[in-house]
Image 1 (cartoon, one colour):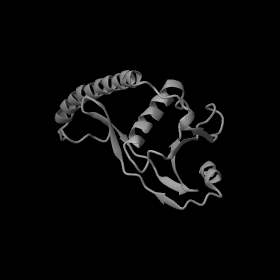
Image 2: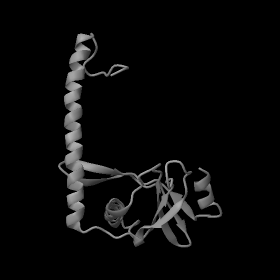
Image 3: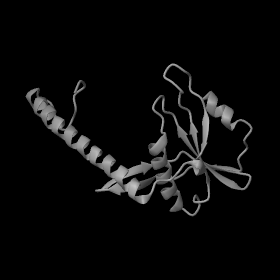
Image 4: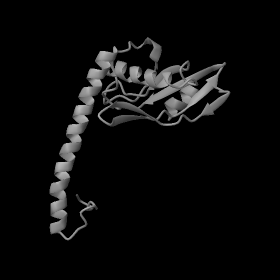
Length: 161
């Protein structure tokens, strides 16, 4: 919190506003929730900050480009946000044993992915997600069987399940 306070100390926005959640479709009935924290107006410009709090393994390289490309896609669909100043306030730690630091990343400086590369990366994510869901379902069937053996409710997980 001190880093956030330091960043916003002295800023007096004309307005602060919530942003409605949107879903970004990535295929096969799967959508990523896009839930930005806020926008604010300052000096006649709309500011769109995104807060990143990775303790380690922060977004970088191609994963950062994918994120910024997706956010750009979402912002471009909203006339009120398409011209906003998009910055990433990265509160990651440089290493696991060091304290968090604030790095302000201007999204306009991050290279965007081509549509083909974006589709490839999202396809890999969707396949991984589908595989994880299938694995969880399989494990759930096994767990439900044991719940029946214990006299439990099939639709209710136990305290230690």
